[in-house]
Length: 239
Ligand SMILES: Nc1ncnc2c1ncn2[C@@H]1O[C@H](COP(=O)(O)OP(=O)(O)O)[C@@H](O)[C@H]1O
Ligand SMILES: [Mg+2]
Image (tube, rainbow, N blue to C red; front, side, top):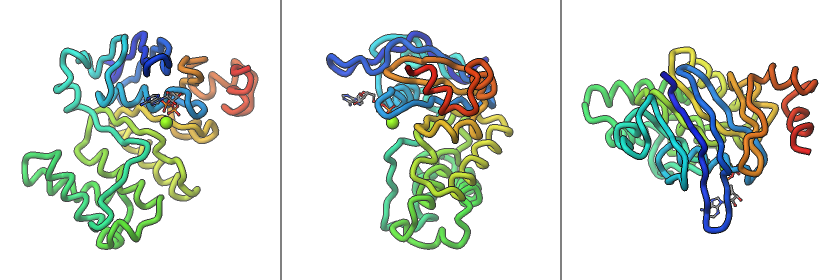
């Protein structure tokens, strides 16, 4: 069974058709990336998959559950990291993780285990005792990512997980996503950075102007378009 199935997805904002009938599938344990320039429709697509926004038309399934008919059940299987996510700046990292576990996990013992797991995954160590307002952007992003995956969702939807991060933080975040995927978690991620998704994802869909221009493994895209990297692929097919 597929972690996510998207068929003929259309999203209109008034007169603007932001997503123009796209389709793709994410397998279990796969990291699938939507990559494309600003305004391509990445965040819109991710919000719809995360049940934050309603599609204008199309079919979406999360582990076989229809997002319209079984929204609550589907929602319980997924977790979403928004592009512009913030955290409560006056809390410490640890307090924030405890607070979020209290919301998302009913069972007290399990909530505690989730917090321990998230603390480990964040890689923030003793800095978890400090207030979030003292964190760099990279540290905050790692904390939010740890929050997103701490309850072990079967599908994690991450909007620009490494945007604005320095190299070391970006490498750490990519490593964390790859490790979780190796453990069976499925990922739908977006990025406007064509070079980076090559190292993050198993397959890539190139999105521009609300349409998928091509979709394949990075190696497949490069081979078929005789390109050295995905940026070159994009330049060839976007013309
Ligand atoms: N809430 C909204 N209302 C109207 N237009 C929107 C809204 N959100 C996004 N758009 C427009 O939809 C298009 C796709 O946006 P978005 O999904 O955010 O793209 P991306 O994440 O790839 O940058 C853009 O033209 C954007 O301006
Ligand atoms: Mg976006």
